[in-house]
Structures are given as C-alpha cells and as structure tokens.
Length: 384
Image 1: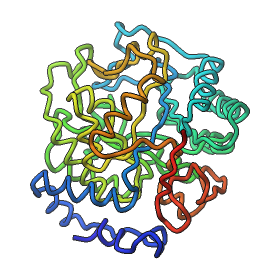
Image 2: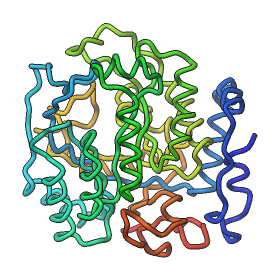
Image 3: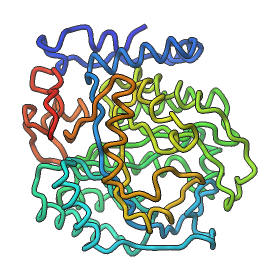
Image 4: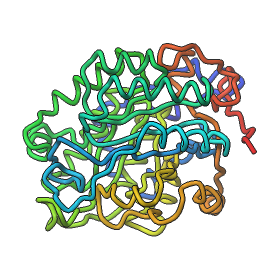
C-alpha cells in the first residue's frame, strides 16, 4: 500500500518535508476500508507518530454567533429552529477572549459561527485586524462562517487570517442538496477553491452516519478529501438533533468515524485532523479514540458558558458548563493517558511548512510555533 509509509520512508534528518505523499488509488482506499479496524487504526497512528510525533495541537475555539440564514436539515442552529436562544459576541468580547487565550499559551484561535449577515466579510476582516493589533503575528487565525464571496476570502487573508474551514459534509451530490435545503455540492466545492486561491489554509471534512449515507459515500468522502488536498480535515459523527427534521434518524456507532479518521490520515499524512467534540459527546472516550486513530488536534471551547450552551449543533454537547480555559488540564491528563502530549504550537499543515507561506505571509520553519523544523523533524519543545 502506498501513502504514509512512502511519505515517511526517510528519517526526519533526511528531509521529510521535501517528500510528497503518494496518492492512493481508489482501489487501494477501497481495500483499506475492508481492513480490520485494529489494523487501520494501528497503521494510521504509526503514520501520525512518524510525521507529527506524539504531540496534539491545541486550538482555542470561539463560537461567535449562532444566527444562521441557512436551513440545513441536520443542524441545531438552523434558521427555522425557533427554540434556539440566539446570540452574537461583540468584537470587544472576542478580543478579550483572544487576549486571555494568548496569555495562557494558545497560538491558534478558531472563530466560527452560522452564516450570519451581521458578520459580513468586511466585519470579519476588521475583526482579524483587531486580533493582530492585540496579539501580533504569532498566533494563527482560523475562520469558519460559511460560504463567502471570493473577494471575501482574499480580504480575510489580507487582514491577517491564515485558515478557513468549510466542511463539505458529504461527497454525495444528491444527499448534499437534500440535507442543505437545495444548495448543491458544487457550490461548496467552488468556495473551497476560492479559499485556496486566496492563499488560506483549507479546512473541510464530513459527517459520518448521515441518513441516506452508504458505504460507497464514506469511501468517496475520503477520496474527495484527498482530491482537495486539505490542510485540515474534520470528521465527526452525525448526532440527530431533536429540533430538526432529522430528529428520528438512527445513531450509528462511533467506530465508523474512527475508521474514517484513520483512513483520512493514511490518505493525507500531512493534514491536521481534530478529535472532534462530537466524538466526545457520543462516547466518553470518543476523542481519545480519534487521537489513537490518527487525529492530532484538540479544540477546547473558550466561548463563555452562557453562550456556548446556546451553540447546540447537536444534543448532548460536552464541556458547555465550565470555562474553556479550565479544560486544558483535563485534556492534558486525557492525552497523557494514551501516551500523547499537548502542544501549544500553532501547528501549521505540512503543505504550508513546505512552502513557507501562511495566508500569503512567509513563516519561519524553525519558529517556535511551527511544530516542525526545517529538516522535517517535530519540535518537541512545549510552551509552559
């Protein structure tokens, strides 16, 4: 099987970053889907260890707004859910959270929200500029606010953003159009192309276990993620929300998400993969299982509790009652329990580290926030 073994064949001192991953064929990915779960998990964790070491990058998540003009059938903050208590954080609140997070050691911040017209591309660009004024150039800024005009992504990059996350959710065009209330998959893919062209790291991904999904869909999810050459790939289990049209859908086991995570790691060795909160909400050790299967990112939620309780994309969301900054000690113990360690570095994708550019801005491969040295070896020095 080609892929991570070829990508990681050379020890770090011989220049891992200069080696491009071999693309798996569709037949090879289909074959790997049939492997016993233990085998694909073992291969994926070995791949992660060789390329990233045992570190798990932290991202500080801020849920900016739960207003959304979209009406996706699976989403708890969909437009027609009248039971949601809507909110918007102000720029002042966001900057205060970012400043505190930076003081505590966070070097990546993820700002996300529904498609809220009040948070226009211009307002988001001003927010990025404000973040740069208060914490400088060191931390990475990731945004996720749905589909924007192409110029919007370019303006965000110019304002200091580094990454943009827009999940395609499913590779099945018919299922996508149904679940997103008429929006075609092609529109989502065009937006991802616009994000790449703007010079931003591209994050996307999919849910596993959607009603109407087949094994063929799950395999093609991996193929599409590989075709897109994602810098970050997010995978989470579908959890039916009681206040959505899909409320009566069956809950499929976490093992499907674990298998998809492992295959995504093998298909995209240099991609950052979060162990999603949804996995931890579905299973008490869901995040640990994702980390053991190739994930290398955790995103503690820094949103104030009174707001994050209202950002319920799915029911049973964990860690909504405690301050997000208090979660890092718990996460450190959890990852240590499976032989991993938290890293406070910004953790850019290997594609970015090879080119030396993030959001159009050159970075130093030997900088303390890069996560990988110029030779390709992982920098294990953690921020204290």
